[in-house]
Image 1 (cartoon, helix red, strand yellow):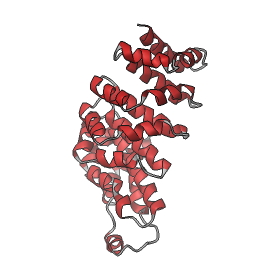
Image 2 (cartoon, rainbow, N blue to C red; image 1 turned 90 degrees about the horizontal axis):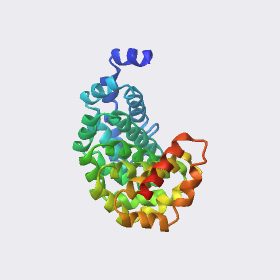
Image 3 (tube, one colour; image 1 turned 90 degrees about the vertical axis):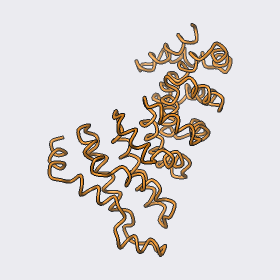
Image 4 (cartoon, rainbow, N blue to C red; image 1 turned 180 degrees about the vertical axis):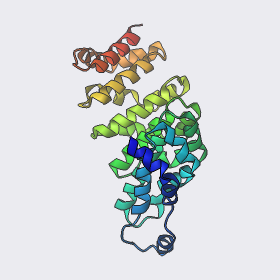
Length: 272
């Protein structure tokens, strides 16, 4: 942490933000659609470094004030005219991760990211063929949706729900963990979005995650079912009929305290 402070105090933030832009010579080559060595590497390194610096809350606003947000949002769209998909996917992942860290527990920056147009490209990236890009985009949306009603509404309006629900069925634990986390943050204290999520077909894949090999996904799924169960008695009936009770009871035997806590929460909601 001391080293991070030294780096920031030495003026690294504005220098790194400058390197989020495409180098002038590279931009000229890019217009000719020619591949180039080390394509996107400088921008990727700058985004990665800024993401690490943003882990400290006192540095988040400093990075935003240096003009990082519009440049990071531009990087999210880099795939549209890229010639090297592997390199650009790595860059996009770093940009999404930097946005996640900048927005972490910072409601003002979450709003700024929405204003800069960051949410639509992140929703679009949920459909990436690169699993790591999918995961990074979902992680960013999860953070942006947390306790921010305007961001939640825009994520849903950008038609994220069908893709997120498909991701719940992914065999990759990291993918379905992030997807259930995004949906959980979307429905929290938002009854209208909760109805949209249920109408979009989320219930069965969420119940399926109760039997996941990923403890974190199990925990998030149990929490989400507890939130669904508060909606109305009809939803409770569907949850029970579709087989959620037995895996929830089995989870009470888990060695993981948080898993036991979430399963008890869901069962309590179902019993009310």
